[in-house]
Amino acid sequence: MFDPAEQRFLSWFKSHGAELDPRVGLAPFEGMGRGAVALQNIAEGDTLFTIPRSLCLSTRTTGLAAALGEEAWAELDGEDAGWAPLILAMCWEDEQAGGKWREYFDLLPTEFTSLMFWSESDLSELRGSTVLDKIGKAEVERDWAERIHPFILAHSDFFAPPEKYSLEHYHIMGSRVLSRSFHVEEWKKEGEEDEDSDEEEEEQDGEDVGDVAMVPMADLLNAKSGCDNARLFYEEQCLRMVATQPIPAGSQIFNTYADPPNSDLLRRYGHVDYLPSSSDPEFLGNQHDLVEVRADLLLAHAMPGKSEEEREERVEFLLDEAGDDTFTLTHPEPLPELLLIAAQTFLLPPAAFQKSRGKSKLPKPVLDAPAARVLRDVLQARLGEYATALEDDLNALEAGPPPVHSGNQNKWNALVVRVGEKRILRRALEEVREALEELEAEEVEKGKDGDGDGKKGGKRKGEKWGAGGGVGKKTRVS
Image (cartoon, rainbow, N blue to C red; front, side, top):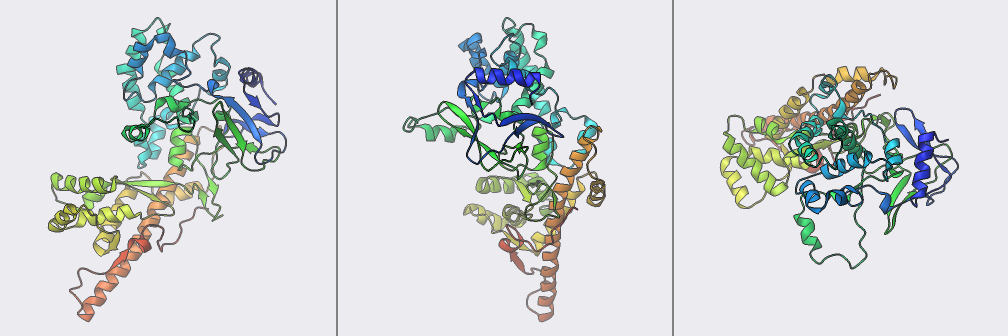
């Protein structure tokens, strides 16, 4: 059941104090690579394997820190260092002949289908998706050129020969961290926390790179939406993978954290979920997909002709009170409350805005006719940012996914991401149009009855037309 590299890895794994249930094996899975499989029936609550904390690779366990010395390590592991210390430590450990994690590195992939490694032609298939802004390749390569590579050259006694520590090597290790790392905090017994720990946590802007760790064996388990059957538990001396439900013999063992959208799955892991929904068998895709609408697009339609200063004033108020200026639309919430609040904020007359800001109180999430007209235009413009039309994409989906090794997988994955995002936008647009039709009909009726001047119109509360609601029909992909 194990190839030679797997046999060497498992021998190494057990020799360092790890334990593996003999009912757990490794096997290749089409489209997913290597994964864990149940060789016999496994009961809920059974321990699949344990990993000593000392076998996890992090900036706390690497030998690079001691080799460099405190001063040099502090230079690398400084403020805003991000994952760079861990990535470089992995590069260094990988180059150590007979190093502690040699057999582990030999089992890790060296080729990736995540967005960091896509060609510009393939990335163009994702035009319109904000995932393109989150790849970070340019930032990584700039950090490499300005900080990491000079650090390697300055400490060439430890990084010898320097040419082995290439940008390509750095990208590979970074992608391993992105796709396989776990958040493993230092164990603290009850009562050991510092008195100031709460204040320190509030002051921290990001995660502690020391808590980011590579966890051998645990990172061999694949993830798949709705298929989670194992979970990693953290103990003082070890990490324990436990079956969370019965796993029949021959079934793959999945460890799935959270429910990321396809855009994030593609960015981090290089694959997408194209599955039926548990609540709607006719739905194919990822029910956790999302699409983002930026404040600048909303401003352009809500405040045309207004100065940059006036627009910035509105956005700053929204940020101060709501903490975000990007609006996330999802399948269950295609018109989120924050989007409705932002539309009302940007549409307020100057005097009403100053009054609202003086009270530090945002408008209510109401979908009235002016807001509906603006959101209709915003959603149409957002759909227009994609290079293809939704109907064309839906027709392309009907052909089904290409063979795994056809060379067209990137284009298919991009297609699935586009469709998932555009379906949400279309549903939101349908709901806005339906609401606007009713609101404009009310305006006409009021004009006929002499009740008002027919301009202001009615309104709909966000509870019905936004968060958790909506009257538009579901858009399905079959």
